[in-house]
Image 1 (cartoon, rainbow, N blue to C red):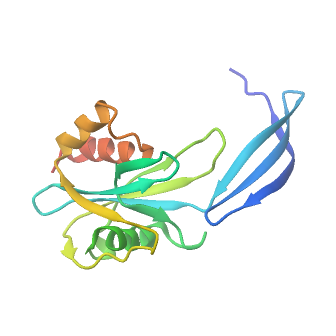
Image 2 (image 1 turned 45 degrees about the vertical axis):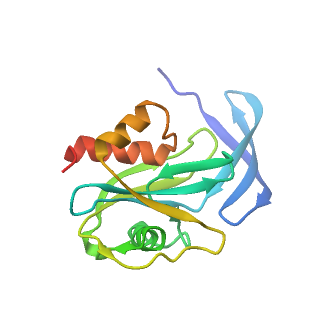
Image 3 (image 1 turned 180 degrees about the vertical axis):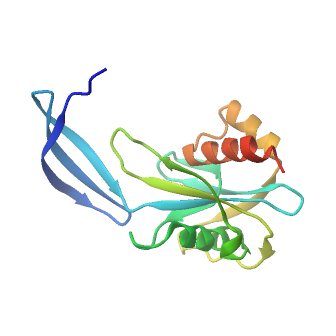
Length: 182
């Protein structure tokens, strides 16, 4: 199937926030003038922390957009667009879980784009092993509970619709497929 050209004619900033900027794009879409929303995100990283016994450390935290607590893998936004994502994953592991590992021990798992229809957020996901106890270093507005889970139990929570966070679903299923829980 031949792809028809789409040409951006204008991009206008409508809102500048802490982690995202919202634009209105004017485009020529196949000869028709259209206005599309576009959200720019500076990028993020996440990590699947695996304990010595093979369990996965998960974080439970309140998410304002959903008005509920969610169970997720640890993740966070880049401090700057130039920050290497592995550095961000290394930092977020310790900040959110209170465990750390050597950065060289983080293994790349997958990359995802979270919402391709209107947002350019890209998250690299890593696996962390050989975890050592450290100390949580949460932002003042964060409250995070750390929980240990079996891979099979997390997979069941995904299939029952109890875990709905896209990065967490992608990470857990990719980890399970690649390592089979090992």
